Amino acid sequence: MSTQAVASSIRVPSQIGKYHVLRTLGRGGFAVVVLAVDTKTKKQYAIKIVDRQCMVKKNRLQYLENELRLSARLDHPNVIKVHEVIYEEDIILIVMDYVDGGDLQSLISQGIRFSVEEQVRISLQILSALEYLHKRGIAHRDIKPSNILFDRDMNPVLIDFGLAKENASSLSTVCGTSFFMPPEVICGTDYDGTKGDIWSFGITLHVLCSLELPFQFNGDFNFIKSIYNNSLILEIKPQGLMGLVIKNCLTVDPQERPTSSQIMKFIEDRQGTFLGIRKTKIEKQNISGCSLPRLIFSVNKNISNNSNGKLLVRSRERIVGLAHRARPLSCNNLVSQCAL
Image 1 (cartoon, helix red, strand yellow):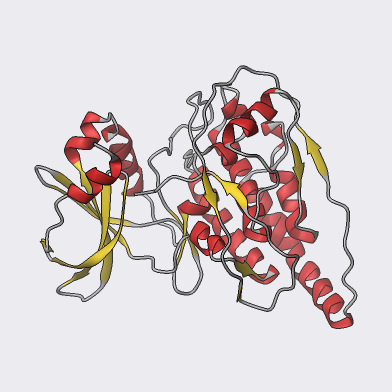
Image 2 (tube, one colour):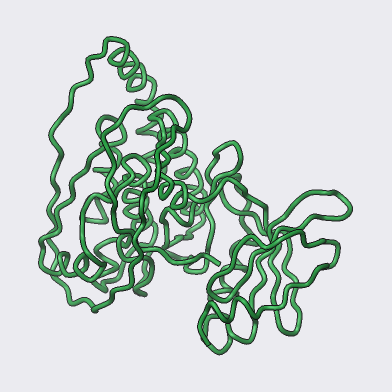
């Protein structure tokens, strides 16, 4: 049975304890997400309804249990909050905060652009979430646009802890989403998951700032092959402060990558000066370009052949936050999977 068929066959109760189901928000994988309201407090929640039997058959129950165990202990404004887990014979129901602003990937697919001021603010909030996790020895291991939701005030919220891992300083499992995976993970070497998160954050930040990846490939296999052949070239398009942050995050040697705390301090120490200079340049209409830094990998490990990508297509352009002038956009390949 296909995952679409599984999702469509999942039983969706009209009433779940004190929660009244209002409507379906989405389907994908082995779950359905519904919008529900607490009949006493009138507060709305998102409830993820998981097919228990299918999770067992596909050997994915351990990932769900890991996600629930970790999520139940997390309490940070930029990390999704799990309030309650309800177990029934055929389904598992996970009651979470309802974050209704859409995910970063969906916003990008609509051609939404973020002002530089918004880029700085959003980056600091995501880094705050990563700092919170990393100080507790937890690596997310799947940082990417589709795992970042936004609330109605455009505050980012990190979701999907199915691949997250505690004691993350020495890991070996190859996991994540190809275009966002760090080279040390793709190459199958032991790695520090928190350092891997920084690489994935750097790729995600590049997408946030430029609406495209810092490389172009037809499918993730060619991307992986380029790492194997030591031929992946990164073209970092954002300039100024964000360009410097991305460049540091995408340092090939994981030991030389900064921590989330160091990146936050780097941004906070420079954002006032950077934004002030940018404002002056805009007022004088004297914005100049710069050449793109090119970083070349040097790795040589055996890797597996894997290709499963989705095309993320830009449809239209809107302005988010303050006005922001930028270059025309182009369609780019992004690998994604449904977080449901």
